[in-house]
Length: 195
Image 1: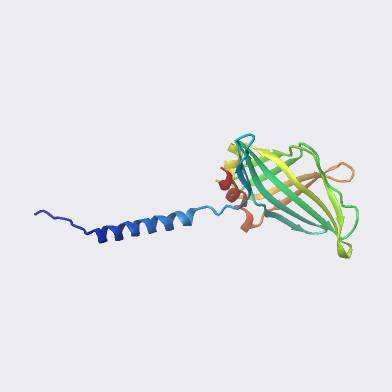
Image 2: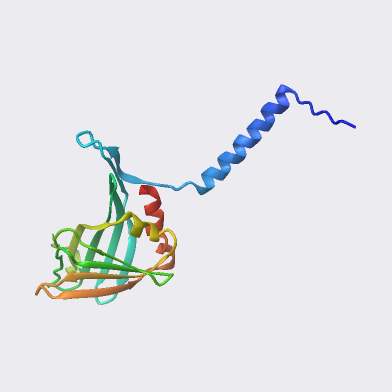
């Protein structure tokens, strides 16, 4: 006995719409929600340049407050972690600088460590706000990172960050920061937007 399958144009169209809708829902659920501060091709060098919008990665509240924002920059085949830090204290004397070569370390959930170094010196910008709160900002500290190192963030969450800077006397200060659970995949999410 032979079975003959027939369909009308309407049934075929309905089936195609169902397939397209199912595929669209699947792709939209796995698509990365990328937001960029820059995403274009440089007209003079013809190199692709992308930089994600920054997002809060670290927040420490103790004697003073430390906040760290991160974005990832890609220029052609080169990648950079770009961090901006803000220190707050209720007394004067806040001063921080990032000398060239200062290390930034990430301890991943799988026990791997990724270490990057600042590409240039960044001097802190000091300011006094209302009610005796003093600020010191270190803006756009750039840490070159290889594509291989950047892809390591895709396979393991960031658990701890060791941030280093120089104080007013030029002495190195290290701060260990446990990354909050909701922020542990942030670098991975940003990396997906530039890889």
